[in-house]
Image (cartoon, rainbow, N blue to C red; front, side, top):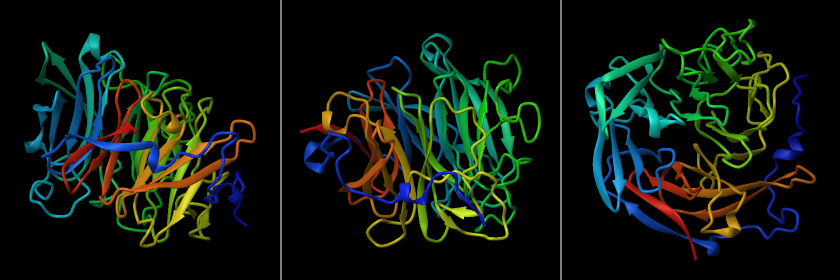
Length: 381
């Protein structure tokens, strides 16, 4: 019988008190409009040490700088994308990820993750010189063939270790027909960890779990379906992953800061904590710390968020916020540091499709209204 390392009882959604702390509520904050007029915005972030500007990524290939209420084009890769991304039809392709090098202020390096003209994934590096992106500096680090048009993943972020983490979905279609989630010989259905400071291409960190064999060296963790946004707690270094489900369940996975990698999150033997395929083996599969079932209130596609570490909303301090694209519902997730039990509760229903959260250099949080083309900031009441 398939077993999980963490008891299923831990993933039950419970509303109550975390230790002696009063749970946050919608009365603790408001949403403030930061910028609007975007076309299918997918991500908002800030460059290290830059407290003045935000960067907003559009699925169709543009990245804008937002400063003082003004939008300025930073980069446009419209011509590198496939026709359906820019044709206005339904697609999961496009410009999907953006990450700034930890030493961006000194070296001007940043990274994007996008699908190309035939739908395959590309991770590329650019350099900013004198405040302008040098288009000739483009360096393609990694290319991954995508067998289907969906489940491209595409998120990227630097960990506190200085390495670049990248999410790729299981390749698409439905039910993981290629068995990618549990196959350690493909980068599909994985979280990668690479060193971008190599003189050519990238290097595989020597302490990656499969650096010496047993799987592809780039793999950090596996058994994911389509992680749509992951993030590191800027205070603790813990990693949170929002993995989009198949038929019934959405899930949040957690990796502590001292992990040595190699976690198997179970797909497609499991969907969240539930058995999905009894014909698939998922050795030592790790259960999610939170999950919810598809319905009209919860939604149908999870959007991973961030642990709040700002100063404007004390009631949210240490809470991980995440949402659902279909419903716009936002939850908080906290862990009792004494018992290590997880607390999860509904925070607010936003009424719009949340494509992403974002975080600035001070730890304040933002949320994107995909259909409305707006970026909002969480502010204290």
